[in-house]
Amino acid sequence: MPKINENYLNLKESYLFSEINHRVAEYTKQNPDKKVIRLGIGDVTRPLGDAIIKGLHEGVDAMASAGTFKGYGPEQGYEFLRSAVASYYAGHNISIDPSDIFISDGAKSDTGNITDIFGNDNVILIPDPVYPVYVDSNIMCGRKITYMSATAENDFLPLPDKNVHADLIYLCSPNNPTGAVYSYDQLKAWVDYALENEAVILFDAAYEAFISDSTLPRSIYAVEGAKKCAIEFCSLSKTAGFTGTRCGYTIVPKELVFKSSDGREVSLNALWNRRQTTKFNGTSYIIQKGAAAVFTEEGMAQCMENISYYKENARIICDVFAKKGIRYFGGEHSPYVWFECPGGMDSWTFFDYLLNNAQVVGTPGAGFGENGKNYFRLTGFGTRENTIEAMERIDKLI
Ligand code: MLT
Image (cartoon, rainbow, N blue to C red; front, side):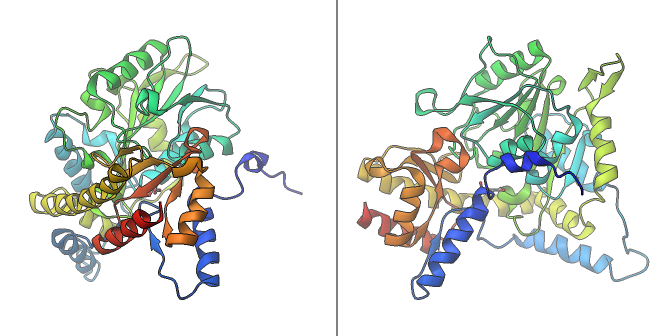
């Protein structure tokens, strides 16, 4: 009989968004005539920009002729896309070596898989609340997690505590779910702490394209010294609408070198490369052709148009809470609006209340951590019509 990985038994029964889907499916089965509006999972609704579609078509056409056909590509991603990502960073005055960039099928996979290159006896620091993949993927390896509280009192932006030592620190800015964004000085405090503790920051920048204030850092590498202590994950899901097409990237600077227990110098870039070449055969050429188009002037302008659309949705959501006197956060440099559940309800109770009485689906804050238990998240990624209708229903209900 095989021994199962019993760490899985310590997970909640289902992943947050699977549980939501399950409850919504149950409701629609019982109420087939009701129009349910989904503002739960952060899934985009705008079609891909024309430039991206053209890039994808070029990729498809290349597959049709023997001379341009592509089989297995480099596991790390094609050079043309790694260079395009590096140029994107250069446009924000950050120099990244293309060979430090690993193309993947999205930040969810990479933030989950990064556990492979670290030992299980590290002290892991994770904000509460935050994107559940960080917690679940560490529970799967049986790791002990130390949580840092993100609350309204610290603007949902926990800062390092010099009395707590950590080896691995997960940060997400703009934050999922709260929409909070670290300032340069706050990120610098984290980089200083990581360097002092010889720790690694695992920085999730999936929502960086939503930052519209040029003084706010879009990357951990905006802070000097970060290449010695940080890995950055990013995704085209939210930047360019790739939730269905799947493409992301992870930056593992070669400056990240640590000692093994027998005193050898080990490069995290080399370890991640070893991991990816063993377990991953690369993102499809067609998708990478589409992704490269994101980083052209035309492609990026089309992406930013979609992002403005989603941000306008977030503003529509915020306006209703402002009118109602409900305390809310985010929605400015983020597609997410995070608010206090009205009437002191806990977040799953409010989820059911909203679904049953307004047929609107959101995400209960409890799914992101204990500190989210009285909060709720709505996303600006819906269509304009649905966002307006959902907020009219919520306005009437609460
Ligand atoms: C979310 O809704 O939190 C995200 O869309 C989930 C994800 O990106 O995996």
